[in-house]
Image 1 (cartoon, rainbow, N blue to C red):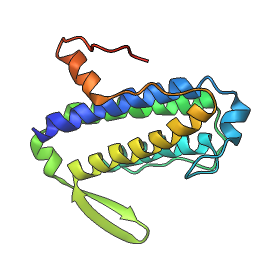
Image 2 (image 1 turned 120 degrees about the vertical axis):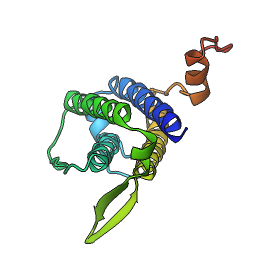
Image 3 (image 1 turned 135 degrees about the vertical axis):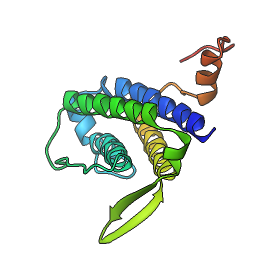
Image 4 (image 1 turned 180 degrees about the vertical axis):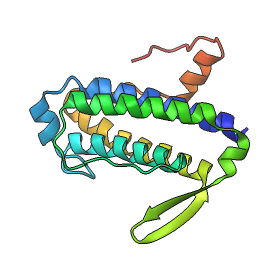
Length: 170
């Protein structure tokens, strides 16, 4: 059951990221790079942080090292490509996991300390981390005239069940 729930959250995470990226793509490069965000210097840096953290945690969950030059100045197209690659990596990871895999220990280095957590907790943390930053970016994008549609998880479940959502989708 845990695997099914995490797979649903992974699908939702990728869907919500696509919505976010679509809205952000409508901003000029200058506005995107120079608009401050609640937790980073700019909306661009916050979006890049969100994707970098996802990619880093997915690599940790596979026991791989993650290398990325976060200081390089990236265009929106480069961020979009990186986000697409990260979404594919998440899908591959989720497709490969069993219930037993989710209980396996993942080691992650934080500062000088190595910490160990079950894989499912690492994934759940990653999804919640991204949700928090998508919320921040939603506010910023709304203030810039690009409000995000609300991608409620219940709508995903209704669609998957073959039912029809009774309200207009933004």
